[in-house]
Length: 344
Picture 1: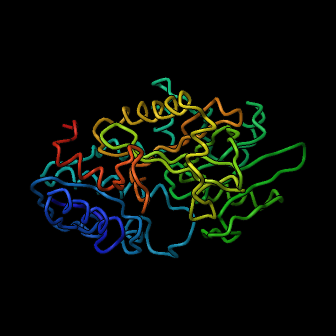
Picture 2: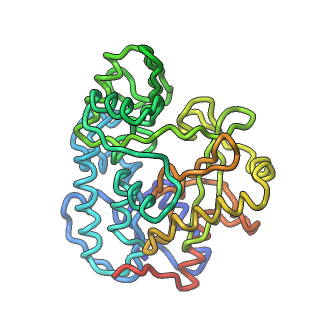
């Protein structure tokens, strides 16, 4: 079995262990660097595509040389990444993911439009090309609070939680003033700085979403990362934070999922999982998705924020069915049972 990924990183190691435990044998990891440098590729058997995200060398090949902590470069990254996906698809073997679906998940504008077209609950969204256009769209739509997201970003890189009130404004982001990613979330209240950050990111494409007020528990507001395998929700983690971005690497923490399920009631929890299953159904050729689901402040409404092609790295998280299987073990079990992509 082939895994296109990064040798020695957590994703490859965890999936490799799961594959062995479920009778799939040893995996062979083909580095993304080989895919991106044009090395000859010839696969046979099953092929799993995983994230290139933990390889600084792969990042340089995708975005170009430079500080790996810099914000931006998403359009170049996406062009080269999707070209790499096409090379993988043309190398033979049987893919366990549809490369076109992966490409859609990595374009927030396309993904949002797809979900909306199927009637799934999503926040209102619009594409903008500059800070001036952002402010204009916010005025026209009467949106005083929005999330500004790089179209091809991940891990909240360059994401800005932006709100205005009269002449005042507030932007919360992990981007520093010199446009590098930081693990410390910052707040800016001066318009020139915010405008410069937005205008620097704009050439890569910006997807703007109306702010969806999230429910809160002790410790802050939360959303859910729900992993689906073979179209079914198998794992969920509540990400709780006192800042608008709930990403665990930005200070978010895992919340008490049992408490949240009890607060939602069985019927509402089942509805939330059904929304995630319907979201996964939009990507029928993909073995797994990571659905970011927001529960409204009223504890009744909900909306899908994003869908992640590689959203399964949740070490130590047991399955919702009580089996204790990890996200990777559930995938290996599904493959061993005969799951195959419907992609042609």
